[in-house]
Image (cartoon, rainbow, N blue to C red; front, side):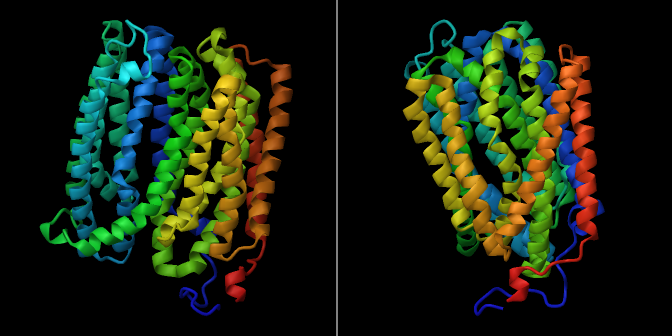
Length: 519
């Protein structure tokens, strides 16, 4: 072992893939998260065309921009939510509930201040939103009021966030997703009613506020009901707890800032330099990419507390085994999704919102490519969070987001929407395909061969799925939803069969020592 290296467990091989991913609890968590996510996606896919056509391109673009702009409020929390989950998970794994309560208490106090800031900023900016983005009347008449209402929604979310983090840290994913699904279904029904009644973006903003308050109260109740060993206590308001949370949160903040710059600033750039109508085109193009990011995110969320527990109990050996083998699965999953979106993306948009939005399908190709690497890169984020020292990974993420914003501003006028899409692609490839994975592999004791091997299997799955998809779409063009589903099934079965074969093959191989074990 290198001098000064962190202590690791002796005599224990890295935890097997089956123990890490397919244990009953983790499998149940992933299934719960994916089920909740599936409901959200299906409802959104069914509802989005109705919302677009009900509001019109201009109003839908304004609504998308308001939601995107207020999404920046997440930066005010300075990474506290991710920090709370990490430290409560670690303390619960060690059965130190008093310490976990301390983290929860100081986090609630900080997030309450953040909620007040959201309200103040929302009120202060509501009068100038329409003029800054040049929203045309009458579409932009209600933009200021809607902006303030969405700001109130963000404040309500911050007040309940610490209770959601407590449920998250205790791995109560089935309960959280049950609450979320109920809210999603209710929101869908009320959205149809309000838009048919002509309430427009004001109706959507009021609905979002009401649902946020109600779901927040349910999360508070569930936290006290099922995770009552960890609760808010005045004795937990200690400077030491605050310093620990902020130390980790500052790194997590850079991840949040990067995500905001990448996925939300694009719409702000388009709204400032182009038009509200073009926001709709780009927003629809980014929809499938957003769903992919969320799909990977909900899987990672289910594994993050588990990975933190592995590190607390088994040290770097266990975490290294988790990373090395999980990466193969995630890159193969990325290959599957890439194949499906690449082959069927344009057909999806034609069936979903109509021929008039064909340009969204073209933009999808540019936005989709880096997401293949992002799926496996999520494992790096999990492991760095478990270590509690994201380090340079957080700096790389911030650099990606900042470069994305700069390139978007430079390319939007000469190249339009395609320039903004290219500005998203370039820094993501550089960060998530090269620098980030290389750094994480070194921190966990793996050489580049492990990462490149995982990527190679993912590319293999993507190639197999793309070939099968192109053949099936040529024989049975996806001109109807039924034919589209047949094409999806063909790609899924082909990629799944090869991925399962690779999985079995790797499980039969004897364990190869990591660089850390050799040292």
